[in-house]
Length: 490
Ligand SMILES: *Cc1c(COP(=O)(O)O)cnc(C)c1O
Image 1 (cartoon, rainbow, N blue to C red):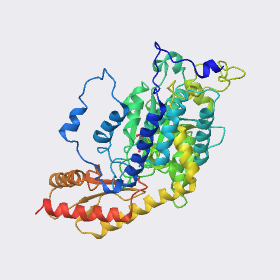
Image 2 (image 1 turned 45 degrees about the horizontal axis):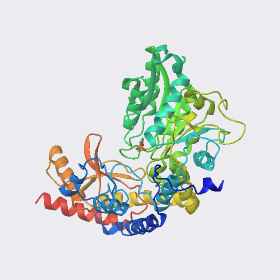
Image 3 (image 1 turned 45 degrees about the vertical axis):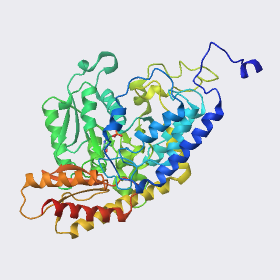
Image 4 (image 1 turned 180 degrees about the vertical axis):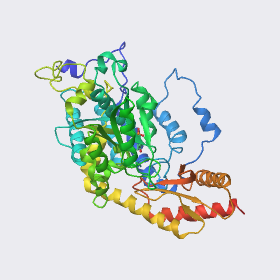
């Protein structure tokens, strides 16, 4: 064995390992030190800044044929990459819907890469931890231990996995063998007109087509109109279609509206439909003390998609799908008989995790969730969720007090939709003005917002999914929006 532990240096064989580990040690320590400073000082930097042309040009450089010392490679990263992030780790980033990451999660991603395991499965500690994190997700959602689940790249993939299982269970045909053309009556899925675009992509990828996803109108609070849903199901049945699945959204991406999960669970039970909850935004409300009641029906779902890289602030990427009926889940993806390919002992003596999704090789996503949950405890994450919701309510109050602002949608959780609305401007001019305010806020590095349209009114959208945001940041947003609005209408 000794000869294997320290084989003679070979002239002909190469490796990616450094010739002298002490060289990389110094650099690695510097990377960690720089990273700590980077996060500590994030508030001092602009939320976003455009890249100078010289920096952009570096990304047109040719394929490197010859080596560059690692110190210099890191120097390029420090100079041309780190100063130009998307900005979602900044306290005043409220665009679209993202998490703000955390240093423990970053350390975990580093360690996961160092340890290097493939989470396709096998009998090793990383696979056990992957299972444990899925079990923790079940516990957070009030799902039974007998349910199954898998960690995936994010919410879009989590939804795709769940809708695949729903399709196969409700198809009345062997879709895996015979394809969608074997389905007798065309399947219909239902969701509100606020549904996330990933469901459209899923319907298309599943071979059912976009039209198989029927969009149901929403009420004044942007929640699915359950009576309209009931009527649509009856109408489709009468027309010879096969209603299969209702998709409830717990936290819409436009306004944070939460569909009535209990009413939808009742309806799904009456109609024997699959109930899927897209909880990419709101499922994790279940761990908060003050707001869990908003999603109390979630434990009744057949499947749930949730997104630890949003409200658990795990570094990208990690999403999770849970399926109540584990055998239906396995039945949709397994390519081997249960345990058939496993050995009685050793590395392969465990269930293969790739039997629960589309990937074969899987990254070690669990570690970043596991380490941060261990460090802080789940209650801390619940408090951070409550904090963001309280901040959104605070911002809503500021907007309601200011005559030059209009609140465009009711604030449900942590998304605030409003616009700057001086007297006498028609819709087109208002939209142009608000877009210009949004772009100036970004370009001046003050705050990152996005925009949307609610009930036909264009508005700015502030999604506070951020553990670094303080109320003072929201005060600044209000002051700067008023300043820019006045400047642009002078
Ligand atoms: C973010 C989001 C998704 C997609 O999740 P990704 O992690 O971005 O893939 C799906 N549905 C809703 C409601 C979302 O907010």
